[in-house]
Picture 1 (cartoon, rainbow, N blue to C red):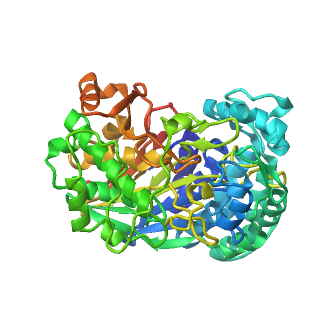
Picture 2 (spheres, rainbow, N blue to C red; picture 1 turned 90 degrees about the horizontal axis):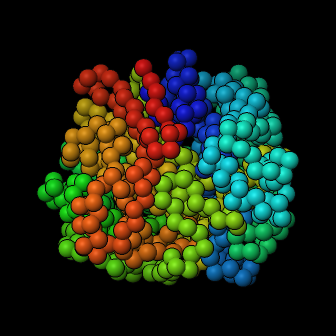
Picture 3 (tube, rainbow, N blue to C red; picture 1 turned 60 degrees about the vertical axis):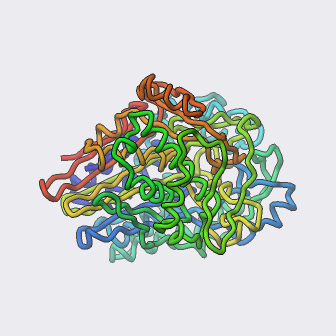
Length: 575
């Protein structure tokens, strides 16, 4: 079974399964196709986070780490010298070392069964022959068309044929990226051993034309979201020094299940903290379909996300943040009305970082409400990302959230057909921050797939949506685990999220009591939130979240998949 945010990626991955490939072959094939199907939401120059379990070891969740670090030249001192107080939201200076492609290749090398040429064949075909542009892709191009024309001519050449914004449904071809993929495939095919071939392709990626061309091209000053021109600092040595790989998952028990996330270099542990806060409460307070439940869930998320903003980053004290004492103290902070304060929890021996609290009234970019990109004319973007889940007949299961390297991130590198990402915008130019910009350190990413394990079942799920990713996953998990809903019912159900957090995206704003809701949540619940002091925004009936999931039911001997109906684009398939 496959579920993803785009029907083409789902179809490609399912095709790999039909040909005898396993879940890892399938997810990699689908992942490369997402670069072409949703180019405004992810790209080869971006990053990813995955979590999976193998048929050989089904009780052990493993994290796929595809988040590149800051380049060696990306220091706070350098950015300050450039006249910046925040890392820009668009432009090559904000680029971390690309991690997505290397992570896909590592996963295929170690857990796949097919050769790289076979796995890349669908993506090469779509790059050569064309991929239909989504309405959201063309809308993104329209937002940044003037930037492309005036300052990023290589992006204009690729995305504005005949100097016009293409229409939705137009077949978009990317021959330069096809050549990059063909080079990787040929490098792998030249080796007799499958795994050695994939490893050779990794070397080609990190030391060959990609590393050389991207570094040289972005080293020339170009326009950033700040309205000023800067040169990127990434070098071929930065590419060569990075290696994707695996990490132990962070897990917590919740009502007979084990929930697994990546570490505090992502926002994932905030979901774990929220679950721990909510676990002993009465079931009715865990029901987002009631005013009390919605209020309790929103206030819990605000507390967990404040801990994220104050403490997360490489080396964060997760044991303390997920401890019984800390969770109990946070639970006691939930009041009967909406808090308008930013309230991080205390960790012994560690002062919480207190970021500047900029109000959204001064924010030039409208807030992202539905997991689709909200893009300003200067390129800065919120609500990015795509997602794919796969489970196979043997019991391998994987969930991956790829992102970054959007077509609007930075100028297209002409020899490559893609640009680099802007993940460094999630770091602070403040040495006291646990997620400060530091050469060689990973930015604290928003990417946050989930694995849920129990004696009889395993579930893989995730969603696009930037800061909303874990917020939209929480009601889904509560409805499934506490309410007994099916995954598709939980995905279809109306949801909500808070904006009372420090935005991970430039220019890093917050909304003290903001809550976005789908109108289908009902007038009584929405009015109940307003009566409790929440500043409620109705987003529409089907606007929030792009969740998908797959699962394995060992008791029944079946697999299942569920996809998001919002936007009529996500798809689940299988047999």
